[in-house]
Length: 327
Image 1 (cartoon, rainbow, N blue to C red):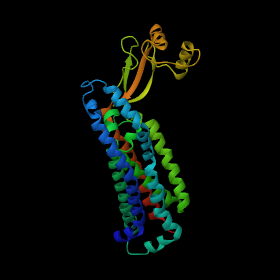
Image 2 (image 1 turned 45 degrees about the horizontal axis):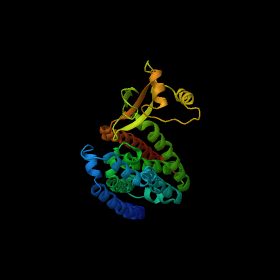
Image 3 (image 1 turned 45 degrees about the vertical axis):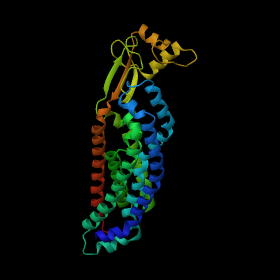
Image 4 (image 1 turned 90 degrees about the vertical axis):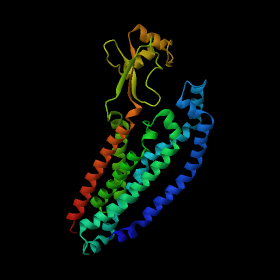
């Protein structure tokens, strides 16, 4: 059974390996250059000891600016697991039902549960293994930027192995469930993509910042400038102003203040600017919610647990659908 499953789905696994190889070449070439520059230009020394030499802030800022566009491009990795769901998970069962080959499988001595378990184990493990390889590659490439900016920002967080593997398993499970439910390959692929995005984006944008309660920092415009705040490796979740009672001002109230201070609609932030003087005069302070960089692994564990849990439920639902199918 295991050998038959491998024969049936080796094309998908080989295509995944080819895709990894194609992506690895430019990533390794650019990564080697970036790592060399990080060491040779003294960026690593500045990160290790910012006060050890003069001009470190400017040196680090220029390094980040030079490579910011390339670093931000890794955001596409957040949708890479969707490929596993659409092109691997969805056809896994839908193709069997669509072509009628499931009847042959169900009339053999192998039980439905064993037949499905073999399929899910071989193809699912292959998908997760590919995700792990991509995670290792991209995490190595981002090493210098993670040391400077931390790993909680989206482009760094999504390429970490726990998150990427868990999300890939989830996408695969969505595809399998869609295939078992719809029994047609193309509709199952469409449903998989829609369901994946419907869960992935809200988890990314709204749930992740609150996996753990953010820490709050309130600073005074006089004694602590607006630039004083969380470390560069921390993740700023929200910023704003609070009044004397500690109430956070709404975006509308902030816009009204900006309009009062600048008639032309432009605002300049920083200690000593008109906005800062307005804050002082009206008893307002800067408000920041942030996740400390040290929470990276706990947030990874929470997100991974959610997606693995979703995957388990979907795979169990797929098994139930297949076991009850009679026609």
